[in-house]
Length: 141
Image 1: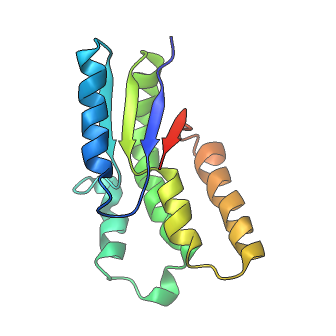
Image 2: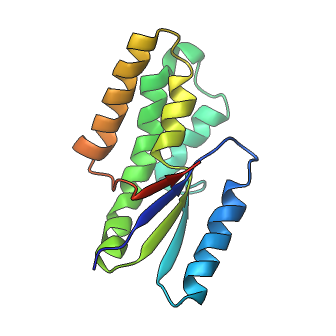
């Protein structure tokens, strides 16, 4: 039986991490296999560019929505290898921030609605198509 991927999305400081942790604890109490992921995965080699970006080490003209999205996508790609294995084993994965957070944060940089829609299509195609990052079963905002 395939597991489920539940993404908890929201603004910084909105309680996502707390709710994700509580959900994993609840699932385990019910006897279900559950694992928690937090993105970005600070301290992991795959999050290096995200950390540099968030620290302001790249000039703004070098980090438009597309470029910044690549940093986050590669961190999720690296994690997706283990995530897919867990999902195949039937584990429920609870994720604190996932792809929708990237769409919101980076899409907010794009003023033109048509260009923003193009960005959304590109980013979802990159992550779920080209990189084959697991799609969420549910997204909670």
